Amino acid sequence: MIYLDTISGTPLHPEVKVAMVRYLDNGFGNPISQHRVGDKALEALERAREETAGLINARKTEIVFTSGGTESINHAVKGVALAMREKGRHIVTSNIEHQAVQRSLRTLTGMGYRVTSVPVDRYGLVDPQDVEKAITDETILVSIMHANNEIGTVEPIEEIGRITRLKGVIFHTDAVASAGVIPVDVEEFGVDLLSMAANQFYGPPGVGALYVRTGTKIAPLLDGGIQENGLRAGTQNMIGIVGMGKAAELAAGEMQGRMEHLWYLRKTFTNRIAEIDDLILNGHPTKCLPHLVSCSVQYVEGESMVLMLDEEGICVSTRSACASGSLRASHVLTSIGLDYVSTQGTLIFSFGIDNTVDDVDAAVGAFKRSVAFLRSMSPLYGKK
Amino acid sequence: MSAYSELVMDHFTRPRNRGNMEHPDGIGEVGNPVCGDMMTIMIRVKDGRLDDVKFETMGCGAAIAVSSIVSEMAKGKTLKEALLISTETVGAQLGELPKNELHCSNLGADALHKAIMDYYDRQKGRPKKTRGGKVEYLERTEKQCYCPYCEHELPSNGSLCTNCGKSTKTG
Image (cartoon, rainbow over the protein chains, first blue to last red):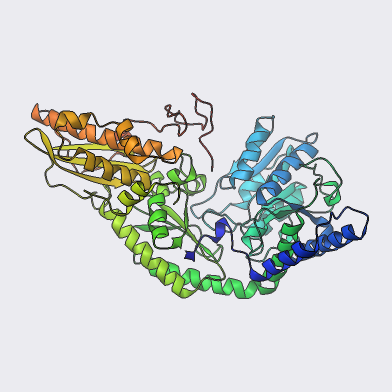
Protein backbone atom coordinates (compact mmCIF):
# COMPACT_ATOMS: atom_id res chain seq x y z
CA MET A 1 0.00 0.00 0.00
CA ILE A 2 1.38 3.38 -1.00
CA TYR A 3 -0.35 6.29 0.68
CA LEU A 4 -0.19 9.50 -1.33
CA ASP A 5 -3.08 11.35 0.24
CA THR A 6 -1.48 13.16 3.17
CA ILE A 7 -3.52 16.26 2.42
CA SER A 8 -6.54 14.31 3.65
CA GLY A 9 -4.69 13.26 6.77
CA THR A 10 -1.20 12.11 7.66
CA PRO A 11 -0.31 8.83 9.35
CA LEU A 12 0.63 9.07 13.03
CA HIS A 13 4.34 9.62 13.66
CA PRO A 14 5.65 6.75 15.83
CA GLU A 15 6.98 9.16 18.48
CA VAL A 16 3.59 10.87 18.59
CA LYS A 17 1.97 7.50 19.17
CA VAL A 18 4.42 6.78 22.01
CA ALA A 19 3.61 10.10 23.66
CA MET A 20 -0.11 9.52 23.35
CA VAL A 21 0.04 5.96 24.69
CA ARG A 22 2.17 7.11 27.61
CA TYR A 23 -0.46 9.72 28.43
CA LEU A 24 -3.23 7.15 28.05
CA ASP A 25 -1.50 4.89 30.53
CA ASN A 26 -0.81 7.56 33.12
CA GLY A 27 -3.26 10.39 32.74
CA PHE A 28 -6.99 10.76 32.76
CA GLY A 29 -7.39 13.90 34.72
CA ASN A 30 -9.19 17.09 33.93
CA PRO A 31 -6.73 19.99 33.80
CA ILE A 32 -9.22 22.22 35.58
CA SER A 33 -9.29 20.06 38.71
CA GLN A 34 -7.60 21.41 41.82
CA HIS A 35 -5.91 18.21 42.95
CA ARG A 36 -2.79 16.32 41.95
CA VAL A 37 -4.44 14.31 39.20
CA GLY A 38 -5.63 17.57 37.67
CA ASP A 39 -2.18 19.05 38.08
CA LYS A 40 -0.61 16.31 36.01
CA ALA A 41 -3.13 16.86 33.26
CA LEU A 42 -2.57 20.59 33.40
CA GLU A 43 1.17 20.10 33.08
CA ALA A 44 0.70 17.97 29.97
CA LEU A 45 -1.76 20.46 28.55
CA GLU A 46 0.51 23.44 29.00
CA ARG A 47 3.51 21.63 27.60
CA ALA A 48 1.55 20.79 24.47
CA ARG A 49 0.43 24.39 24.29
CA GLU A 50 4.01 25.61 24.38
CA GLU A 51 5.06 23.13 21.70
CA THR A 52 2.18 24.15 19.46
CA ALA A 53 2.89 27.85 19.94
CA GLY A 54 6.54 27.25 19.08
CA LEU A 55 5.58 25.86 15.70
CA ILE A 56 4.09 29.18 14.59
CA ASN A 57 6.13 31.65 16.71
CA ALA A 58 3.19 32.54 18.92
CA ARG A 59 3.02 33.03 22.67
CA LYS A 60 1.54 30.07 24.44
CA THR A 61 -1.22 32.22 25.90
CA GLU A 62 -2.38 32.80 22.37
CA ILE A 63 -3.15 29.15 21.54
CA VAL A 64 -6.68 27.80 21.84
CA PHE A 65 -7.03 24.05 21.35
CA THR A 66 -9.94 22.93 19.19
CA SER A 67 -11.34 19.79 17.57
CA GLY A 68 -9.53 20.50 14.32
CA GLY A 69 -9.18 22.88 11.41
CA THR A 70 -12.89 23.22 10.75
CA GLU A 71 -13.70 24.24 14.30
CA SER A 72 -10.82 26.72 14.36
CA ILE A 73 -12.05 28.30 11.15
CA ASN A 74 -15.65 28.45 12.31
CA HIS A 75 -14.52 30.03 15.55
CA ALA A 76 -12.37 32.63 13.82
CA VAL A 77 -14.99 33.69 11.30
CA LYS A 78 -18.10 33.55 13.44
CA GLY A 79 -16.38 34.64 16.63
CA VAL A 80 -15.13 37.87 15.06
CA ALA A 81 -18.42 38.49 13.29
CA LEU A 82 -20.24 38.23 16.60
CA ALA A 83 -17.77 40.30 18.61
CA MET A 84 -17.47 43.09 16.04
CA ARG A 85 -21.08 43.34 14.89
CA GLU A 86 -21.55 46.83 16.24
CA LYS A 87 -18.56 48.14 14.29
CA GLY A 88 -19.46 46.65 10.92
CA ARG A 89 -20.86 43.71 9.00
CA HIS A 90 -18.50 43.37 6.03
CA ILE A 91 -16.00 40.55 5.50
CA VAL A 92 -13.39 40.13 2.77
CA THR A 93 -12.29 36.69 1.59
CA SER A 94 -11.12 34.88 -1.57
CA ASN A 95 -12.75 32.62 -4.13
CA ILE A 96 -10.68 29.58 -3.26
CA GLU A 97 -11.18 29.27 0.50
CA HIS A 98 -11.97 25.94 2.10
CA GLN A 99 -15.65 25.06 2.52
CA ALA A 100 -15.34 25.69 6.26
CA VAL A 101 -14.70 29.38 5.51
CA GLN A 102 -17.21 29.61 2.69
CA ARG A 103 -20.10 27.99 4.53
CA SER A 104 -19.37 29.88 7.74
CA LEU A 105 -19.63 33.04 5.64
CA ARG A 106 -22.80 31.78 4.03
CA THR A 107 -24.35 31.37 7.45
CA LEU A 108 -23.33 34.95 8.24
CA THR A 109 -24.74 36.40 5.02
CA GLY A 110 -28.00 34.78 6.00
CA MET A 111 -27.83 36.92 9.14
CA GLY A 112 -27.21 40.20 7.38
CA TYR A 113 -23.44 40.27 6.93
CA ARG A 114 -21.95 41.17 3.55
CA VAL A 115 -19.06 39.32 1.96
CA THR A 116 -16.68 40.42 -0.77
CA SER A 117 -14.75 37.54 -2.32
CA VAL A 118 -11.67 38.48 -4.31
CA PRO A 119 -10.79 36.46 -7.41
CA VAL A 120 -7.56 34.56 -8.02
CA ASP A 121 -5.38 34.36 -11.10
CA ARG A 122 -4.87 31.19 -13.11
CA TYR A 123 -2.32 29.97 -10.59
CA GLY A 124 -4.68 30.53 -7.70
CA LEU A 125 -2.85 33.58 -6.41
CA VAL A 126 -4.67 36.41 -4.64
CA ASP A 127 -3.59 39.96 -5.52
CA PRO A 128 -3.11 41.90 -2.27
CA GLN A 129 -4.23 45.05 -4.08
CA ASP A 130 -7.63 43.45 -4.66
CA VAL A 131 -7.88 42.83 -0.93
CA GLU A 132 -6.94 46.42 -0.17
CA LYS A 133 -9.54 47.79 -2.58
CA ALA A 134 -12.21 45.58 -1.07
CA ILE A 135 -11.71 46.84 2.48
CA THR A 136 -14.19 49.53 3.60
CA ASP A 137 -15.01 51.31 6.87
CA GLU A 138 -17.49 48.55 7.54
CA THR A 139 -14.99 45.71 7.15
CA ILE A 140 -14.39 43.74 10.34
CA LEU A 141 -12.50 40.70 9.05
CA VAL A 142 -10.27 39.54 6.23
CA SER A 143 -9.95 35.77 5.82
CA ILE A 144 -7.46 34.51 3.22
CA MET A 145 -5.92 31.04 3.35
CA HIS A 146 -2.16 30.57 3.54
CA ALA A 147 -1.93 27.49 1.30
CA ASN A 148 -4.72 25.94 -0.74
CA ASN A 149 -5.47 22.30 -0.01
CA GLU A 150 -6.61 21.41 -3.54
CA ILE A 151 -3.95 23.01 -5.75
CA GLY A 152 -1.19 23.77 -3.25
CA THR A 153 -0.76 27.46 -4.11
CA VAL A 154 0.77 29.56 -1.30
CA GLU A 155 -0.67 33.07 -0.90
CA PRO A 156 1.20 36.34 -0.19
CA ILE A 157 0.09 36.46 3.43
CA GLU A 158 2.81 38.87 4.61
CA GLU A 159 1.73 41.51 2.08
CA ILE A 160 -1.91 41.10 3.00
CA GLY A 161 -0.97 41.30 6.67
CA ARG A 162 0.72 44.65 6.11
CA ILE A 163 -2.46 45.97 4.48
CA THR A 164 -4.76 44.76 7.23
CA ARG A 165 -2.45 46.20 9.90
CA LEU A 166 -2.52 49.57 8.20
CA LYS A 167 -6.29 49.50 7.87
CA GLY A 168 -6.83 48.13 11.37
CA VAL A 169 -8.85 45.12 10.23
CA ILE A 170 -8.66 41.69 11.86
CA PHE A 171 -6.86 39.18 9.61
CA HIS A 172 -7.50 35.44 9.81
CA THR A 173 -5.63 32.87 7.77
CA ASP A 174 -6.54 29.24 7.24
CA ALA A 175 -3.15 27.58 7.63
CA VAL A 176 -4.50 24.05 7.98
CA ALA A 177 -2.61 22.82 4.91
CA SER A 178 0.60 24.70 5.71
CA ALA A 179 1.21 24.82 9.48
CA GLY A 180 3.70 22.12 10.39
CA VAL A 181 4.62 21.61 6.74
CA ILE A 182 6.24 24.90 5.69
CA PRO A 183 7.41 27.80 7.90
CA VAL A 184 4.51 29.69 9.46
CA ASP A 185 5.33 32.73 11.59
CA VAL A 186 2.47 34.77 12.95
CA GLU A 187 4.73 37.78 13.54
CA GLU A 188 6.02 37.82 9.97
CA PHE A 189 2.54 37.24 8.63
CA GLY A 190 0.94 39.95 10.71
CA VAL A 191 -2.13 37.79 11.23
CA ASP A 192 -4.48 38.10 14.18
CA LEU A 193 -6.00 34.64 13.88
CA LEU A 194 -4.69 31.41 12.40
CA SER A 195 -6.26 27.96 12.04
CA MET A 196 -4.24 24.77 12.13
CA ALA A 197 -4.85 21.00 12.40
CA ALA A 198 -2.69 18.19 13.82
CA ASN A 199 -3.50 15.67 11.15
CA GLN A 200 -1.51 17.65 8.60
CA PHE A 201 1.79 17.22 10.45
CA TYR A 202 1.68 13.62 11.67
CA GLY A 203 -0.46 14.24 14.72
CA PRO A 204 -3.84 12.65 15.40
CA PRO A 205 -7.06 13.69 13.64
CA GLY A 206 -9.78 15.51 15.56
CA VAL A 207 -7.53 18.09 17.20
CA GLY A 208 -6.28 21.47 16.08
CA ALA A 209 -5.66 24.97 17.31
CA LEU A 210 -6.72 28.54 16.76
CA TYR A 211 -4.07 31.19 17.25
CA VAL A 212 -5.59 34.35 18.73
CA ARG A 213 -3.30 37.40 18.92
CA THR A 214 -3.46 39.06 22.31
CA GLY A 215 -6.11 41.75 22.27
CA THR A 216 -8.12 40.42 19.33
CA LYS A 217 -11.83 40.92 19.75
CA ILE A 218 -13.43 37.52 19.33
CA ALA A 219 -16.41 35.77 20.91
CA PRO A 220 -16.27 32.10 21.87
CA LEU A 221 -17.85 29.53 19.60
CA LEU A 222 -18.50 27.09 22.43
CA ASP A 223 -20.05 28.54 25.56
CA GLY A 224 -19.77 26.92 28.95
CA GLY A 225 -16.83 26.66 31.31
CA ILE A 226 -13.79 28.89 31.37
CA GLN A 227 -11.32 26.59 29.64
CA GLU A 228 -8.85 27.94 27.09
CA ASN A 229 -8.80 31.39 28.60
CA GLY A 230 -12.56 31.64 28.37
CA LEU A 231 -12.44 31.30 24.61
CA ARG A 232 -13.40 27.65 24.15
CA ALA A 233 -15.46 25.85 26.74
CA GLY A 234 -15.30 22.13 27.30
CA THR A 235 -12.92 19.63 28.79
CA GLN A 236 -9.99 19.38 26.47
CA ASN A 237 -9.24 16.36 24.28
CA MET A 238 -6.12 15.61 26.30
CA ILE A 239 -4.99 12.56 24.35
CA GLY A 240 -5.26 14.41 21.08
CA ILE A 241 -3.63 17.53 22.45
CA VAL A 242 -0.66 15.60 23.82
CA GLY A 243 -0.28 14.04 20.38
CA MET A 244 -0.54 17.41 18.70
CA GLY A 245 2.09 18.93 20.94
CA LYS A 246 4.55 16.16 20.23
CA ALA A 247 3.82 16.34 16.51
CA ALA A 248 4.38 20.11 16.60
CA GLU A 249 7.70 19.72 18.38
CA LEU A 250 8.87 17.17 15.80
CA ALA A 251 7.60 19.24 12.88
CA ALA A 252 9.43 22.34 14.06
CA GLY A 253 12.70 20.47 14.58
CA GLU A 254 12.61 18.49 11.35
CA MET A 255 10.97 20.98 9.03
CA GLN A 256 13.94 21.75 6.82
CA GLY A 257 14.79 18.10 6.18
CA ARG A 258 11.16 17.19 5.60
CA MET A 259 10.64 19.97 3.07
CA GLU A 260 13.74 19.01 1.12
CA HIS A 261 12.61 15.40 0.94
CA LEU A 262 9.09 16.33 -0.13
CA TRP A 263 10.29 18.79 -2.78
CA TYR A 264 12.49 16.06 -4.19
CA LEU A 265 9.60 13.58 -4.38
CA ARG A 266 7.40 16.22 -5.96
CA LYS A 267 9.97 17.11 -8.60
CA THR A 268 10.60 13.46 -9.46
CA PHE A 269 6.87 12.88 -9.78
CA THR A 270 6.10 15.91 -11.95
CA ASN A 271 9.06 15.12 -14.21
CA ARG A 272 7.87 11.55 -14.78
CA ILE A 273 4.21 12.38 -15.41
CA ALA A 274 5.23 14.93 -18.04
CA GLU A 275 5.24 11.89 -20.34
CA ILE A 276 1.46 11.60 -20.12
CA ASP A 277 -0.09 13.77 -22.79
CA ASP A 278 -3.11 15.99 -22.33
CA LEU A 279 -2.38 16.39 -18.65
CA ILE A 280 -2.55 19.79 -16.95
CA LEU A 281 -0.80 20.71 -13.69
CA ASN A 282 -2.76 23.12 -11.52
CA GLY A 283 -1.51 25.74 -9.10
CA HIS A 284 1.64 27.84 -9.05
CA PRO A 285 4.83 25.98 -10.04
CA THR A 286 7.00 27.48 -7.29
CA LYS A 287 4.79 29.28 -4.77
CA CYS A 288 3.27 26.02 -3.68
CA LEU A 289 3.26 23.35 -1.00
CA PRO A 290 6.22 20.99 -1.30
CA HIS A 291 4.13 17.84 -1.07
CA LEU A 292 1.08 18.34 -3.27
CA VAL A 293 0.46 17.95 -7.00
CA SER A 294 -2.91 18.60 -8.61
CA CYS A 295 -3.20 17.25 -12.13
CA SER A 296 -6.11 17.23 -14.54
CA VAL A 297 -6.21 14.33 -16.96
CA GLN A 298 -8.20 14.97 -20.12
CA TYR A 299 -10.84 12.51 -21.31
CA VAL A 300 -11.01 10.61 -18.03
CA GLU A 301 -13.05 11.03 -14.84
CA GLY A 302 -11.44 11.37 -11.41
CA GLU A 303 -13.19 8.74 -9.31
CA SER A 304 -12.56 6.01 -11.87
CA MET A 305 -8.83 6.84 -11.70
CA VAL A 306 -8.84 6.78 -7.91
CA LEU A 307 -10.47 3.32 -8.02
CA MET A 308 -8.00 1.96 -10.55
CA LEU A 309 -5.06 3.27 -8.53
CA ASP A 310 -6.58 1.84 -5.37
CA GLU A 311 -6.75 -1.56 -7.09
CA GLU A 312 -2.97 -1.28 -7.47
CA GLY A 313 -2.53 -0.20 -3.86
CA ILE A 314 -1.99 3.51 -4.51
CA CYS A 315 -4.13 5.90 -2.44
CA VAL A 316 -4.84 9.36 -3.83
CA SER A 317 -7.78 11.74 -3.91
CA THR A 318 -9.95 13.56 -6.40
CA ARG A 319 -12.46 16.39 -6.45
CA SER A 320 -14.62 15.06 -9.26
CA ALA A 321 -18.33 15.62 -8.87
CA CYS A 322 -19.08 11.93 -8.29
CA ALA A 323 -16.45 11.64 -5.61
CA SER A 324 -17.35 14.82 -3.76
CA GLY A 325 -20.91 13.75 -3.13
CA SER A 326 -22.40 16.64 -5.03
CA LEU A 327 -22.64 16.90 -8.77
CA ARG A 328 -20.75 20.18 -8.81
CA ALA A 329 -17.24 20.94 -9.98
CA SER A 330 -14.64 22.07 -7.45
CA HIS A 331 -14.94 25.80 -6.77
CA VAL A 332 -11.18 26.06 -6.53
CA LEU A 333 -10.59 24.61 -9.98
CA THR A 334 -13.27 26.71 -11.62
CA SER A 335 -11.88 29.82 -9.91
CA ILE A 336 -8.49 29.31 -11.56
CA GLY A 337 -10.22 29.09 -14.91
CA LEU A 338 -10.02 25.37 -15.49
CA ASP A 339 -12.78 24.23 -17.85
CA TYR A 340 -15.55 22.20 -16.26
CA VAL A 341 -14.71 18.99 -18.07
CA SER A 342 -11.09 19.02 -16.89
CA THR A 343 -12.16 19.62 -13.30
CA GLN A 344 -13.84 16.21 -13.38
CA GLY A 345 -10.59 14.47 -14.27
CA THR A 346 -8.46 16.01 -11.52
CA LEU A 347 -6.35 13.97 -9.12
CA ILE A 348 -4.51 15.23 -6.05
CA PHE A 349 -1.30 13.40 -5.16
CA SER A 350 0.11 14.46 -1.78
CA PHE A 351 3.33 12.91 -0.46
CA GLY A 352 4.38 12.11 3.08
CA ILE A 353 7.71 12.03 4.88
CA ASP A 354 7.65 8.20 4.77
CA ASN A 355 7.31 8.04 1.00
CA THR A 356 10.31 7.12 -1.14
CA VAL A 357 11.33 7.54 -4.75
CA ASP A 358 10.31 3.90 -5.28
CA ASP A 359 6.82 4.86 -4.15
CA VAL A 360 6.80 7.65 -6.72
CA ASP A 361 7.93 5.26 -9.45
CA ALA A 362 5.23 2.75 -8.56
CA ALA A 363 2.60 5.48 -8.49
CA VAL A 364 3.63 6.88 -11.85
CA GLY A 365 3.52 3.42 -13.40
CA ALA A 366 0.05 2.72 -12.04
CA PHE A 367 -1.10 6.21 -13.04
CA LYS A 368 0.02 5.75 -16.63
CA ARG A 369 -1.66 2.35 -16.85
CA SER A 370 -4.92 3.65 -15.39
CA VAL A 371 -5.01 6.61 -17.74
CA ALA A 372 -4.32 4.40 -20.78
CA PHE A 373 -6.99 1.90 -19.77
CA LEU A 374 -9.66 4.48 -19.06
CA ARG A 375 -8.85 6.52 -22.17
CA SER A 376 -9.21 3.37 -24.28
CA MET A 377 -12.90 3.36 -23.44
CA SER A 378 -13.51 7.09 -23.28
CA PRO A 379 -15.84 8.56 -25.89
CA LEU A 380 -13.81 11.77 -25.88
CA TYR A 381 -10.30 10.43 -26.40
CA GLY A 382 -8.94 10.68 -29.93
CA LYS A 383 -12.25 11.92 -31.27
CA LYS A 384 -11.80 15.64 -31.66
CA MET B 1 -13.77 0.94 -2.49
CA SER B 2 -16.08 -0.74 -0.04
CA ALA B 3 -19.21 1.12 -1.17
CA TYR B 4 -19.27 -0.89 -4.40
CA SER B 5 -20.48 -4.48 -4.65
CA GLU B 6 -18.24 -7.18 -6.07
CA LEU B 7 -20.30 -7.25 -9.22
CA VAL B 8 -19.77 -3.54 -9.81
CA MET B 9 -16.02 -3.78 -9.12
CA ASP B 10 -15.79 -6.76 -11.49
CA HIS B 11 -17.44 -4.85 -14.32
CA PHE B 12 -15.29 -1.83 -13.57
CA THR B 13 -11.92 -3.60 -13.60
CA ARG B 14 -12.87 -6.03 -16.41
CA PRO B 15 -15.42 -4.21 -18.50
CA ARG B 16 -17.09 -6.19 -21.24
CA ASN B 17 -17.81 -4.80 -24.69
CA ARG B 18 -15.80 -1.63 -24.40
CA GLY B 19 -14.44 0.10 -27.46
CA ASN B 20 -15.43 1.63 -30.76
CA MET B 21 -17.66 0.01 -33.38
CA GLU B 22 -17.07 0.59 -37.08
CA HIS B 23 -20.24 1.93 -38.78
CA PRO B 24 -22.74 1.09 -36.05
CA ASP B 25 -26.43 0.71 -36.93
CA GLY B 26 -27.40 2.99 -34.04
CA ILE B 27 -25.65 5.36 -31.64
CA GLY B 28 -26.92 6.60 -28.29
CA GLU B 29 -25.05 9.33 -26.42
CA VAL B 30 -26.02 10.55 -22.97
CA GLY B 31 -24.52 12.44 -20.14
CA ASN B 32 -22.68 15.63 -19.69
CA PRO B 33 -18.95 15.86 -19.08
CA VAL B 34 -19.68 18.92 -16.96
CA CYS B 35 -21.26 16.52 -14.45
CA GLY B 36 -18.45 14.09 -15.01
CA ASP B 37 -20.15 11.39 -17.09
CA MET B 38 -20.43 10.67 -20.79
CA MET B 39 -21.72 7.40 -22.14
CA THR B 40 -21.95 6.26 -25.76
CA ILE B 41 -23.57 2.96 -26.71
CA MET B 42 -23.24 1.59 -30.25
CA ILE B 43 -25.35 -1.26 -31.61
CA ARG B 44 -25.26 -3.70 -34.50
CA VAL B 45 -28.68 -5.06 -35.45
CA LYS B 46 -29.24 -8.36 -37.30
CA ASP B 47 -32.68 -9.90 -37.88
CA GLY B 48 -34.30 -7.65 -35.33
CA ARG B 49 -31.83 -8.63 -32.61
CA LEU B 50 -28.88 -6.81 -31.02
CA ASP B 51 -26.05 -8.72 -32.60
CA ASP B 52 -23.34 -6.60 -30.98
CA VAL B 53 -23.29 -3.83 -28.39
CA LYS B 54 -20.25 -1.70 -27.58
CA PHE B 55 -19.76 1.22 -25.23
CA GLU B 56 -17.40 4.09 -24.61
CA THR B 57 -17.73 5.78 -21.24
CA MET B 58 -16.00 8.55 -19.38
CA GLY B 59 -17.23 8.50 -15.82
CA CYS B 60 -16.95 7.18 -12.30
CA GLY B 61 -16.68 3.51 -11.36
CA ALA B 62 -20.46 3.11 -11.30
CA ALA B 63 -20.84 4.65 -14.77
CA ILE B 64 -18.28 2.32 -16.32
CA ALA B 65 -19.71 -0.73 -14.56
CA VAL B 66 -23.24 0.19 -15.68
CA SER B 67 -22.12 0.54 -19.30
CA SER B 68 -20.59 -2.92 -19.16
CA ILE B 69 -23.63 -4.47 -17.45
CA VAL B 70 -26.14 -2.87 -19.83
CA SER B 71 -24.17 -3.99 -22.87
CA GLU B 72 -24.20 -7.57 -21.55
CA MET B 73 -27.90 -7.43 -20.71
CA ALA B 74 -28.77 -6.12 -24.17
CA LYS B 75 -26.68 -8.40 -26.37
CA GLY B 76 -28.76 -11.03 -28.15
CA LYS B 77 -32.11 -9.49 -27.20
CA THR B 78 -34.69 -8.35 -29.70
CA LEU B 79 -35.07 -4.59 -30.02
CA LYS B 80 -38.40 -4.72 -28.18
CA GLU B 81 -36.89 -6.74 -25.34
CA ALA B 82 -33.93 -4.37 -25.16
CA LEU B 83 -36.26 -1.38 -24.83
CA LEU B 84 -37.64 -2.99 -21.69
CA ILE B 85 -34.24 -2.71 -20.03
CA SER B 86 -34.81 0.13 -17.63
CA THR B 87 -33.19 1.95 -14.76
CA GLU B 88 -34.98 -0.45 -12.42
CA THR B 89 -33.77 -3.63 -14.09
CA VAL B 90 -30.24 -2.26 -14.29
CA GLY B 91 -30.49 -1.16 -10.66
CA ALA B 92 -31.59 -4.63 -9.67
CA GLN B 93 -28.43 -6.04 -11.25
CA LEU B 94 -26.18 -3.54 -9.53
CA GLY B 95 -27.38 -3.88 -6.00
CA GLU B 96 -26.24 -1.21 -3.57
CA LEU B 97 -24.78 1.92 -5.09
CA PRO B 98 -23.68 5.03 -3.25
CA LYS B 99 -26.58 7.49 -3.41
CA ASN B 100 -24.87 10.15 -5.49
CA GLU B 101 -24.09 7.59 -8.16
CA LEU B 102 -27.69 6.54 -8.83
CA HIS B 103 -27.59 9.24 -11.46
CA CYS B 104 -24.75 7.38 -13.21
CA SER B 105 -26.80 4.18 -13.34
CA ASN B 106 -29.69 5.98 -15.05
CA LEU B 107 -27.45 6.79 -17.97
CA GLY B 108 -26.95 3.17 -19.07
CA ALA B 109 -30.54 2.35 -19.91
CA ASP B 110 -31.02 5.78 -21.50
CA ALA B 111 -28.00 5.39 -23.77
CA LEU B 112 -29.21 1.98 -24.94
CA HIS B 113 -32.69 3.30 -25.70
CA LYS B 114 -31.29 6.24 -27.61
CA ALA B 115 -29.14 3.88 -29.69
CA ILE B 116 -32.23 1.84 -30.56
CA MET B 117 -34.24 4.99 -31.37
CA ASP B 118 -31.37 6.17 -33.57
CA TYR B 119 -31.53 2.83 -35.42
CA TYR B 120 -35.28 3.26 -35.99
CA ASP B 121 -34.70 6.82 -37.21
CA ARG B 122 -32.15 5.64 -39.74
CA GLN B 123 -34.53 2.96 -40.97
CA LYS B 124 -37.07 5.70 -41.64
CA GLY B 125 -34.49 7.72 -43.55
CA ARG B 126 -34.01 10.42 -40.93
CA PRO B 127 -30.54 11.96 -40.70
CA LYS B 128 -28.29 9.75 -38.66
CA LYS B 129 -26.09 10.66 -35.71
CA THR B 130 -22.44 10.70 -36.60
CA ARG B 131 -19.35 10.49 -34.48
CA GLY B 132 -16.63 13.06 -34.67
CA GLY B 133 -16.94 16.74 -35.42
CA LYS B 134 -16.99 19.40 -32.77
CA VAL B 135 -18.80 18.31 -29.67
CA GLU B 136 -20.90 21.00 -28.01
CA TYR B 137 -21.32 19.44 -24.61
CA LEU B 138 -23.85 21.72 -23.09
CA GLU B 139 -26.13 21.65 -26.10
CA ARG B 140 -26.12 17.88 -26.25
CA THR B 141 -27.52 17.34 -22.78
CA GLU B 142 -31.06 16.15 -22.65
CA LYS B 143 -31.01 15.57 -18.96
CA GLN B 144 -30.19 17.82 -16.10
CA CYS B 145 -28.25 16.80 -13.03
CA TYR B 146 -30.39 15.02 -10.51
CA CYS B 147 -30.62 15.24 -6.76
CA PRO B 148 -28.71 12.27 -5.38
CA TYR B 149 -31.34 11.68 -2.68
CA CYS B 150 -34.73 11.92 -4.35
CA GLU B 151 -33.68 12.11 -8.02
CA HIS B 152 -35.73 15.22 -8.67
CA GLU B 153 -34.30 17.46 -11.35
CA LEU B 154 -31.93 20.02 -9.85
CA PRO B 155 -32.05 23.74 -10.63
CA SER B 156 -29.09 24.88 -12.67
CA ASN B 157 -27.77 27.07 -9.88
CA GLY B 158 -28.06 26.82 -6.15
CA SER B 159 -27.44 23.65 -4.27
CA LEU B 160 -30.71 22.84 -2.51
CA CYS B 161 -33.00 20.29 -4.05
CA THR B 162 -36.38 21.97 -4.57
CA ASN B 163 -38.14 18.67 -4.03
CA CYS B 164 -36.74 17.16 -0.87
CA GLY B 165 -34.86 20.19 0.42
CA LYS B 166 -31.59 18.38 0.95
CA SER B 167 -28.34 20.09 0.17
CA THR B 168 -26.54 18.53 -2.75
CA LYS B 169 -23.24 19.93 -1.61
CA THR B 170 -21.44 17.72 0.82
CA GLY B 171 -17.99 18.90 -0.14
